[in-house]
Image (cartoon, rainbow, N blue to C red):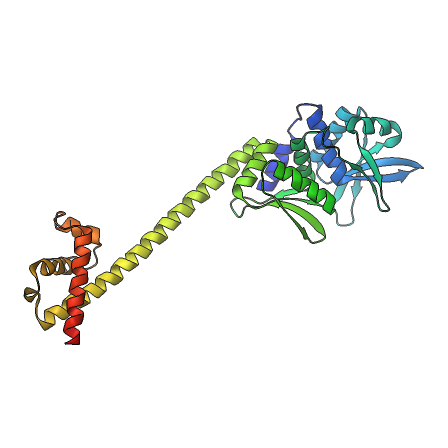
Length: 307
């Protein structure tokens, strides 16, 4: 199962603990998927959803919060897909809805919708509901990205404020006619998943993160080791060339014995590191001592070439 579906399936099974969590989650459903419609000269509130499990969650929340039994209808679309419409009659539940949520009812040309009052609902539950209906998260195996998409900028900014209330460092952008509130950092996504309570998905996410971090650390160490090895080999080749010049020009017996000893070690261990050369002389000479003697051998070779 894709990680995205794993998270949503687990979210749909979470039962809100109290009335504040129920309000918060249901408000996200209404705010992001609610539409008012006139039917038989009566006003209905329709919540339009695609997933049956999420539809069941919304239905149960409406029963528990509004104390009414909404109607669920299935509508088949032209592309062989379908969605579910939860109809709430505002004639029956109008006053109760407003009393429960202490909302302001705003009317615009295109639609009527409910405006949140955040003193009467759980912020975490609202984010959980918003992610359920309009959220997406990438599999951590591929990349770190989590987003909630909405249709208008006001709602995007509201979710952005809720994200940052929990220090999640979210960002807002407009892409393909949608406003996106998104997280890009692995730590922020982990904290959000922990916040909304998806324990199983969180364990999977953390396991993948730990594995990726380990692989990245190993790769960095290997790259660093490879770079050091290349540098060691390049230096060794250059030192052997300088030693060969001295041998051809004057011979190693005509340079100071300390330098000649190091030159012989280099010839014996052509591609050894300084540490390995120190081990070869049983630590009689330090790494710094061998380095400076090799440098002096190089200077002597350069002087012989110039003369």
